[in-house]
Length: 311
Image (cartoon, rainbow, N blue to C red):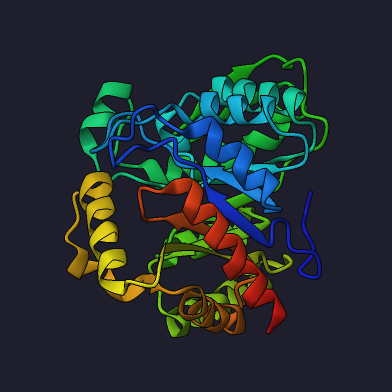
């Protein structure tokens, strides 16, 4: 299923806390899921790692739990490390979630590879993951649709019978990443491209590349989507301190390395920065809350959304 540029698949979304970099107890995952839907957001997203710096809930199980407690919210992966997973089992997991939330799934994938120990633990090779991901994207629609797959490729061999149940509708595919390879992969396979850690000018350049690559392949240009880290509050220094804690706990990153792409400050200040990304071509925006008061941040992100939409 291709999403036409005139119809954003999920104009506003929130990253759900299946990662726990702040060490929150009890882990407020389902509370945040319910709050995101109640606040009127279009989508809730989860990330994916097997073993990383913070505690992590497994992505497909987390999204299945979110499906069970929502009725309207679209549910997306931002993004699955599909090349680290056995693709037939992955398709089975996605189709199972679709039974709980028919037609509400968005399948985001990325190459990953920044943490080799989890790939070793999963029995997957980091080398060649891009080619393996490409082949998974070739066969995933057939697997999800309940069609038998016989595939013999350079990086992937599959002999799969029809899977039942099949999905109710083939979900949109989104490719995440800011590299040229990720943009090319999105243009070749996807309905959306999810960019992160880019300035508005850099995002615009990637959008132009995306359109050029898609045109050269004779495909519609995928929808440009933005993943934005936000810390909202009147005390900007406190916002920055919380964002620094998140980056350290989740990615083992120094704040200085990503500060220029992190949106901090009041509702109006964050809305103004997001408006710049909207003008740069972002048709869908997914917000990652960078403060430990997650429920409070959901309320403030809803105010940001309203401010951007009003401009």
